[in-house]
Length: 363
Image (cartoon, rainbow, N blue to C red; front, side, top):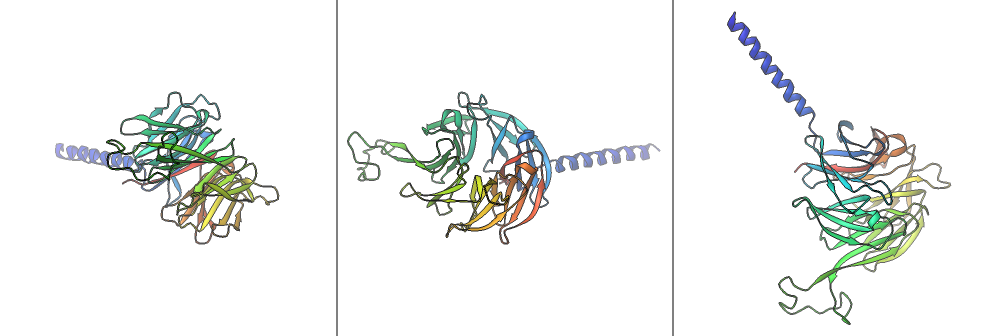
């Protein structure tokens, strides 16, 4: 009898451990994961991209706008915006494996963080109130670099893999800033790019002194969403107030064309093969309710319009190039677009006001 009782207790303990392990496993974030900011709920939704089901939610901090996953897929960084001249000065951090928020990054005097991008293992961000781009080093847990753009509402940021070129959009100024690291010139010296190669050791132990140059190119009213073509030769910017798109040649730093689109675009993304450009936003006058326009990147012509039922925001291209995800903020869903057919293939039902999107894959 004693033997039976002990066996029953052992079985119960084993079953309990199995249930506990199963619950812990089920709470873990799948890899890869689609990350969706439910802006109006101040939450991060973690989505299994295979099933399009939400597998977890985590507090995202006040007024979350943009999100970026760390290169190893373990953490998510979320800008806490609050609008122009905001008092907010944090970037929220989420442990994706544990599905919990951890200590946020305190930006100190830098306010209204918005755009986010990783480069060289460091997190670049914009701070609209201060008109700057900053850089946070997760290894030292410190901001190690800040650069002013001199433009109003520096909003989104893109960082080249070489780390010597960045691009920002500046909403109120209606410009795109190209920020490049160049060899510093002395008083009366030739312009950057015209300097002869210095003799060995002439620049000191670190070589010739480097500096940053900011070139701001007029785009259009409400320049906000932008992307750099996969070949790095062009920048396309969506001008929300004008319902136009502007193409900028990177080499000459000049706008080569501005043309009308059927949406007041606040986000713009190239497909990974560079063939198509997606523009999402609210419908422009006479667009019959379209909130996403797909353009041919080579001809600049519209090839498709989509009415997803409400104003659209964040756009994310799946890393395998098969699908695009578009946040439909007004309808509390994320649309999934098959990039072969350019048709809607499904939806993710979300909380209120989905906006920023990111992709996390553990490595």
